Length: 252
Image (tube, rainbow, N blue to C red; front, side):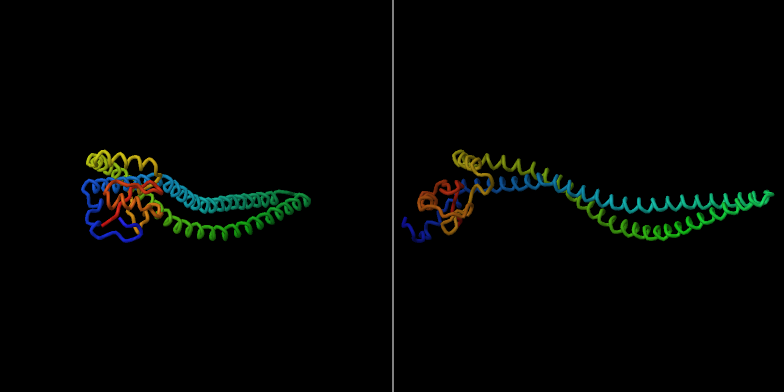
């Protein structure tokens, strides 16, 4: 082997990547990566679902607040209506008393009381008009809020339903890939499998097997030594990157 010069094309015809045993390792690696990806997605789902639940709760609370405000005003209007009716009844009673009194002082006292009641009644009627206008505004606000928010809630609940369905799919896929991984492990030669398993323990995340590109390990993007290149191309044996420890090979 001549360091620093391109390797002869003949060497590439006997690549480790073309070795049937090594191909079984690549298949196992592919399945392990898929399992890791599926497991990560599944682990992230509860957080996403909780976030959606909070959004749904906030949106529904917004509808409740708008509706509650309207109900509060309607209750106030009913209270004012009751007061106005009550004052009207008091005025009627006092006027009836006026028909029965003999003395001027008593008549005048009732007259003053009636005038006071009518003033209060007028104030309450003005207050009721203001409340009725507020009710109209609140009703429109509540209607718009309910329409818009309800649509958002429907959309969020649809997302939640889709995520729950995805959760089921992920669990099924993980069960299926576990069976495939078990089958793959049975096909990989023991020495090769032992190196692979050790590599997996060393590295936090895949890839555990990476092709060499431009004399760099594509797993860590660092240049590998000429000894590593020689081991992969000439000796055709399982070789690990001398930078990150990944199993490396050349694709051809």
